[in-house]
Length: 366
Image: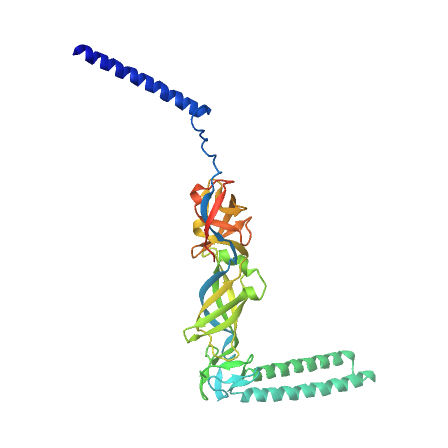
């Protein structure tokens, strides 16, 4: 019994040794291609196309929208005060009346000034007559030249006195300095006014100005003098359903160093006289920008050298550097060697390498 067991174990060990040798021989022959079926080496990288989904590149404008709040003011606006203290005799205007430049708004008591003008005119006439007689007499030797010179000085003095009297008379007539709309009269006939008494306000509101602050980042856009690039749209709580068109007509020459903003002025046509100075306005400035290649945000990758995308040319993936200019609603505007309608990979990005063959299995058309 013991002898039979030893023989069986010896046979089993021999079988294992022989089997291992045969297996090693088959494996070696397989590698060198001798015996058995011929086996191919693993495929090289890039020889098997990677399945991807692409989308056409679009070219869109990097337009921006800026909003700000400002207060309207008339093209010309003034508060009218008298030049002298005097009693009001007449008021010639009503609230919201349209007046012309030079129209008399308020008349002050000018009786004394009228008399002063008349007296100055008499003195001037007398000085003129005396000068004429002396100029005639000096030719005949009747008076010395010094008398003529004195008479001429008196005549010129009388002229100045008359002009001063007329100016004092004119100051009693308070006039409109320009065409516009007057406000509520601040005085009545019989009132005693001084130089600090407000007569009324006067506005030339055919054009309304709205001043608003522009951030430093948009200063370059203000340098564009094209009409289209300086258009604005204004809305006001007084007319919620209406939009008023205007344009940026001026801006300051320096920035506010604390706020880093630049004051800009928009001009709004108010020939229909809907708008009033002092109204609040929300300004919308649509700023046209340059055209850039636009791709879905998911297609932009990042590496040590910055951002890039994968483009497909002739069935091969090309790694294309692309600088991000702006992001808008899940899309990215890029600057780089990218053309309109290039195909950009949006799915299958992780397996791509430069020169990798690809198989486009789908396209997300715009």
